[in-house]
Image 1 (cartoon, rainbow, N blue to C red):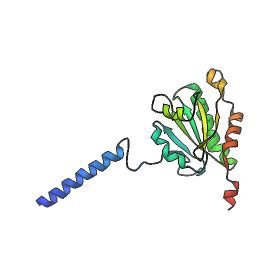
Image 2: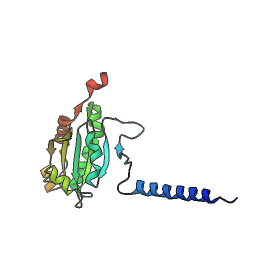
Image 3: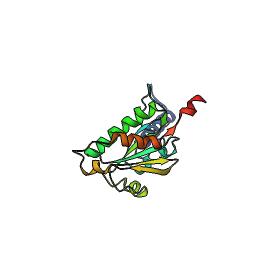
Image 4: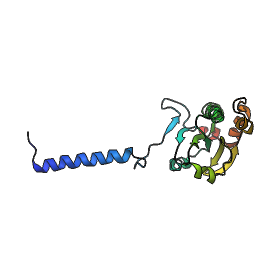
Amino acid sequence: MTLSERQEWILGGSLVLGGLALYIQSSKHPLIKPTKVVYPPKNGGSPNNRIYQIIRDPSELDPLLVTKAPLLLNFVRLGEPASSKLTISLQKIVSTDMVKENKAVSMVSVECDGTENIPLAVKYAIKEIPSILCLDKQLPAGNYVDLDLNRDPQNTEVKVEQLTQWVREHAKDITDDQHN
């Protein structure tokens, strides 16, 4: 079976357009950006409490700023003991403790290893890493820094009760929303 010249042009054009669409979607700036949610998993969890994948570029924060629940920005250096300890504790609080208490809050870690996210740290006046900033309706509502953990991460544990209380104060109570 041979193709006519017209069919060859249509087939060639389709392949070029398909390749271009694939290239654009796999590039750093795709036309349709998927939201990268780690928690809740697709098979359960609270839709009000989300943990998003780590932000490596300031533009990745923009779609998250419109969340209804307060958003905790966890400024971290990957692999650093203090950052790892704080992140693990914060993820547990957001995914478990706040769900049990009917509190809505989401979180995302902001990678501060390189220079890409320095503008975010400057914009939100972050002086210590790791530290957590709460954004409520896109406005800074509070920050949390564990200075003891930052000074001596090897010999200091996260003050979980203090961190939980801080998150509780900034989370949105959704008890009334569930009854309506």
